[in-house]
Amino acid sequence: MIKIAITGAAGRMGQALIQAIAQTEDLQLSVATESATSKFLDMDAGELAGIKTNGILVTANLETKLQDFDVLIDFTNPNATKNHAELCHQAGKRLVIGTTGLNKTEKAYITQIASDIPIVMAPNMSIGVNLCFKLLKIASQVMGPDADIEILEAHHRHKKDAPSGTALRMGEIVANTLQLDLQQVAVYGREGNRTPRVKDSIGFATLRAGDIAGEHSVWFVTEGERVEITHKASSRLNFAQGALRAARWLMNYEHGLYDMQDVLNLNTI
Image 1 (cartoon, rainbow, N blue to C red):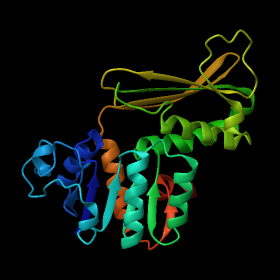
Image 2 (image 1 turned 60 degrees about the vertical axis):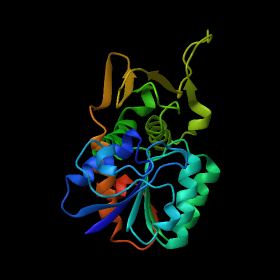
Image 3 (image 1 turned 30 degrees about the vertical axis):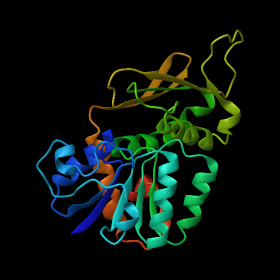
């Protein structure tokens, strides 16, 4: 039985992860944490997630629970994720990171500690999205040099970072395949721009509304035709199931930084 710790247990992804773990036979929720100011502290994690009581009480003190889990799954915020990563490094624990919006310094730190502990870090844990990443590379090779490329994404009204980490990763894949620097070619909105579209630019459009779990679409548009690679998530459970798959996969490794392409063996295709 693999013991799992969930940070941000009261958040949307935290609850989805608790629900997903309850549906497995080989994984066990052993730790659930929230911030020190959370109103959900000391609440049963199962009840918090809308399922049966599981006896795991939500705590703010991860540092006192480091011997109680095998893998920590983190979908919180950049500052909290870095703190959790530091604790996992100190305790030699495996780590799955789904947090987006990490800056260069935070990413560099995670890369550094991955020489000592195994980490899966990905902007999107969905199996379908990661398949789209692979398809984007193929489409970029075939159509990219001649196409206008636009990336559209939509999420719920509460999401803070824009464009989404997934949309940015899609842009990176396209740009890298075309040997372009995304920072140089990305266009984030065109309000007030009265000039024609610049060749080799990659456009981003962002929508925030309601309870949209996540939608991403990349357009490759040439004269006379358009190819769209699209993923639509109807539930956060698919992200949670991907994260749990990553947690299982990590049990085979002692150190290293990986992403979902590694977990799904897509890098060999």
